[in-house]
Length: 414
Image 1 (tube, rainbow, N blue to C red):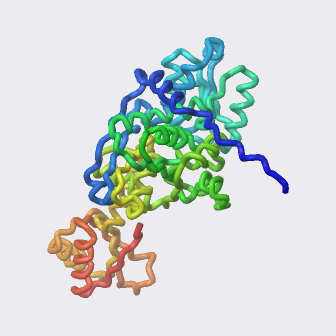
Image 2: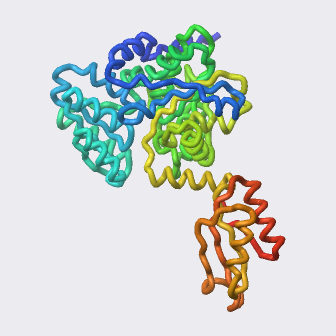
């Protein structure tokens, strides 16, 4: 009878001792961000919800932790030659900031289509920015070429044990602040944060479920762990976790240590970003809000649990944030555009406005359309942007307009 060798037991490249050592190494140079209970989200979901505000780091993201832990372990020779990374996001900011603070030259390679504001922010931390290629893969390849040519140390955004250990320090702080946590909801991009978090929870002394969260448009770690082949592409609000290929080290750690991975859609991500601003008065980017998005999307899955959510970043374009907030107002019925058919005669608009006044709905903008319409020449379409208290209030206005004989419909529903 043939015998098969026993499978090699999993040996993690990152231990809890590594993470505690990282915390001791970096704690004086990062923000000990608060972990606070959210009573409103707890009431909304039936879970006891604690939020860690990593968006309050100096560069507004947790990525500082792993970058700094790596920088502090470089040899004097490596420090003198400098470091390099490929990133258009939070890793670039965190590495550039702490490298400058430590007197280490930093070069960041970004795709040529990187938004100007991100280039300016990174240069503001005194890093040299090199724009190369039209994709992250092209920028990454160029960074590895420069690494060899110039003798720089490449600092990977997630697939490095030193980076993973640094990211895990956020979970150390959460459990110090709230020892009773029994669930972590953690965004997954390349997998550094969740690998560090899961290492910490396994050493906590009581069972803690770790659930990863990916955007539906980029289920790369989900594919890797579950053997699926869903596409990874699209314009997601959570660009910070829009990773096509997770790390090799992190994939092995996630497969061994993480309990589950869930996917969230764009609407859930938008809702989470909007609610965090409205309820917690804090600005969080799409990737940073992914944990809350999962809680809102699957409330029954986490009902009765004591849940820790790391708000891992707050770098979101202000115009994009404005769009998210306005779309959320439209979905809730607090902001709407109504299309009303009128007769083109004196007093027509006045009579409609009077109904808005009676229903106490605020008119924001009025758009007349006489030319580009299929109505007869004397017909008139008016689009009215308005502000109501909620969906029921808006519905009462629409009912009143129709009862008065006006053909009324909603347009541009978000």
